[in-house]
Image: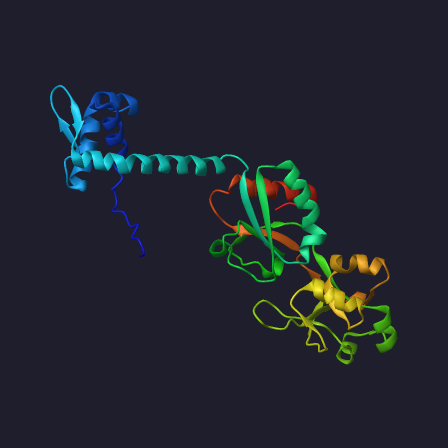
Length: 306
């Protein structure tokens, strides 16, 4: 059976005063403990009794005792109030120092080239923070999915997010394996791509991304075709190394394969620039210390500025 946790506005007012009076059996001692006047304590308790609909104390000129209703209220309210105080303290602790679980959503491609060294040094610097990486190409709703921040290429970040640059602008390179280029030839002009097996990227919204090129400052969008579609760059990179076809991706992803001779860049003079990679998060008034620590750490390691 679903419980209803709705509480009337002000329903908890006076509970602390009640608990203090019940513990000390004295309005005056409760007032001293809470740093208010006995009159204020009396008013708070009377207001609470009115809301509850029952007398909670038996008052005489010499003593203060609990009614049966007061005994029941005390038995249930005391542990609940102590739990609320503990919960407040736990939340306050996370708001005062870098600790707790830091959840990040990131594309798979970013993990090995950017995050692995950053996370290793961050975990060493902040042992009280647990880092959880959810590698996915989906553009998730950070708040709805419980993430503290995300990492994405700049062009995919919503304008209402705060963005912190992690890399400089990156070129998009077109690469192919030596075997593929020996078999199909090397494209020399953008139009040559129409005769090649070009791998395509499936966006998280289901659309197939076209290829972008730059012809002396003029942006060119080419709808390519080919035998292979992937939803992330690492998969596309592996297929390109195996000779499936040409692939377009951010230069750092292909750098090691190019250096090893497994891939060869083509049409380099037409490589467009992307905004680069950014950390992004909702524009809260107050950033939790765990996220602030991560932001400062990545800025220091990458040498970039927000």
